[in-house]
Structure formats: structure tokens, C-alpha cells
Length: 394
Ligand SMILES: [Zn+2]
Ligand SMILES: [Zn+2]
Image (cartoon, rainbow, N blue to C red; front, side, top):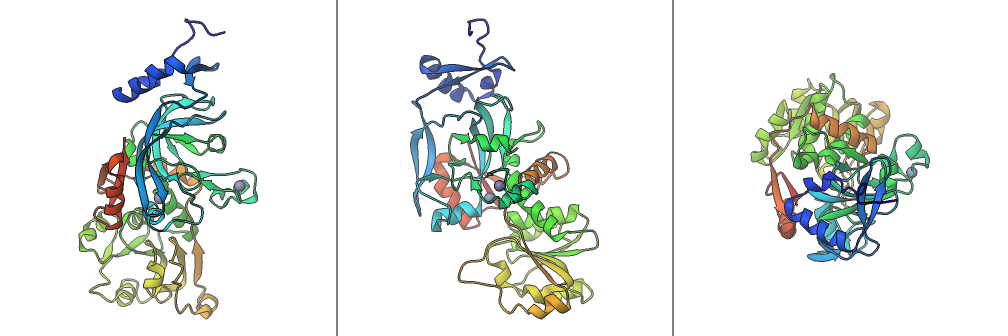
């Protein structure tokens, strides 16, 4: 039975910003009932009816995003609610805002590169105050792909920020399936929230490097030096490869070098095929990563590839475009290989967060912090490539 002696509010709440702590505690004590975690002795306050209204950026319809007050999320049994600390603005968010997406239903709170602090827990696995990163895939754990470690291809996958409300809000509900299927990672104490938002994008690059089997013998060509191109360059370098990056924006040349490029090629003023062949003794690149939407259609990727080389389709192509002039005979006679990488698995997320905490400083990657109220401006500046990376912070 609960008594005044054993009713203890988790000290994690004290770690919340002052404003937020008062915001939660006063109304919670007035109308909420306590839930005791018997293992830890921690009491978490839980409401059956959401009464406080958090602020969220809601995609009301394609093209229209608005700051609204919506019901606070309430944790399901086995799940939890986090106070969002930071959420990356990704080109996928821009695409969903402008054009929609096949799995997207409005109204929806976007944002899938989410980190935060647990504020309500209905699972023994996490307690209020834990700092966590969320793998956006909500997967079944039972289908063949889940059982063989490819949960990004789960037959029942749902995605936070697409089919569940995401992180462009003050709080976010994490479904029990995410907790059960190891979709949450504790953020190491050495890693700040803004940098921790890179976990998911970096995990996508780890998936790509794995699919390509990048090794120290390889020369890897990366098309584009946006955030994903630069993260791919860092991973290729970490795996010991020689790295070529093609980028037309002059201001990104230095960044590409800092990320690990041995040679940056400007396809606007240089002949890309010629330079790649020069740099590889006429062989061509052993692995190619088109790192922005449409890159695989824009460049003659098969001409750039060495015999036995691998091309990874890392980002989607617009419906109206396809890779032109694929010589299918080169797949047979020259053993060129075409592979795909779609998002990342939960295990890539675990690897990525550890890399960010230890082996990858990425201190060249400047991040612009955007307040939730300014989300539309943040999306627009991401669309116009005004900065390398923007993150919504609370
Ligand atoms: Zn993303
Ligand atoms: Zn599955």
C-alpha cells in the first residue's frame, strides 16, 4: 500500500528544466494518481485523462504546419513518455511537409530523429530521468526480417514521425513495442542531446557501409556533401577506405575534407568520370553512395563503377526518374553489383550511439538550434540548404 513514507517522486523530474518541472508537478499532484514501480521504489504520476496541453508542431495537411496545443501524451502499459530535448530536422521531414508520404496520415506531429528524457514510465526497463534516443521503427519482432536482424524491413513496421506522432513537440509517447523490441538507447553521459540526434542518420550510413562491405582496399565515391554524404564519408574513412566526395557547393569542400575526403571533386567544373578514373588508375570506384535524392539519376553511376564495384541506392529517386542506361551486361560480365539501403535497424542505432560517444567527434558538423515555434523557418532553411543541419530544441 502507498503511504507518505514510500511515496517518493523520482529525482529525475528535478533534472527537468525549472519551467517544465513546475509545469508538471503542480497539476500532477492535484489530479493524477501515482503508479509505483515496485522494483525501484519510484513513483511515477499517471493521469487517466490528459488535462494539460503541450505545444506541438502539427502537420495539419500537406504543406501546412501549425503550432498547436494538443493533449499531453499518456504512457500505455509497458510504454513511456519522454520530454523531447532535441529532434533533428531531416530532408525526409521537408519532403513530408511539402509533398506528403505514402505512410503519412494528417494531422501528424513529424520528427523521427528524437532524443529526450523519460518523464513517465510504465515499464521496469526505464525510469523517469533516463536520457534516451529513440529508434523510429516500431517493429513486430516476429516476422522473418525481424528474426534475422533486419527489423528495418519488418512486414508490420510503423515509424515514429510517420505513422505515430513524433518529436516536433514538447513531449512524445513511446509505444510499448519500442520498449520491448530494444528501440530505446540510453544516451551515454559524455554525449549531449544535440549530437545524440545524429544517432539515427548515422545508423542509416552504417547500414549503407555494411551493405557495401566497405573495406580498406576500397576507393569509395560519395555523391553529395550534405549531412548524409558527410556522415557516409566519416564511416567510409573509419573503415579504412580511400574517400572521394563529389559536391558542387564550394562552401562544403572544406567540410568534406574534415569529414574524411581524400579528394573533393566539383562536378560543376571538373569531369567527374575523368577524375574518378584518374584517382583510381583507370579502374573506377569500388563503391558508390549517391547521398542525396536523385543523385543516382543525375550522375552516370555505372560508368563510374569499377569491375566488381558496388552501387548502393541509399536515397530514393523521384517517381519520374530512374537510373538511365544501366548496361545489364556489365552486371554479368563485370560483376557490378547494385544494392539498396533503406533506413536502419535497431542494432545500427545501438552501434551509432556508441560511435558518437567514443570514436566519431564530428566537431566539424555545426548544428543550428531552432525553437519549436520557429519550425516552419527551420524546415524552410533545411529545404534551401542554408545550413548543414538544424535541430529543434526544447
Ligand atoms: Zn531522418
Ligand atoms: Zn517484424
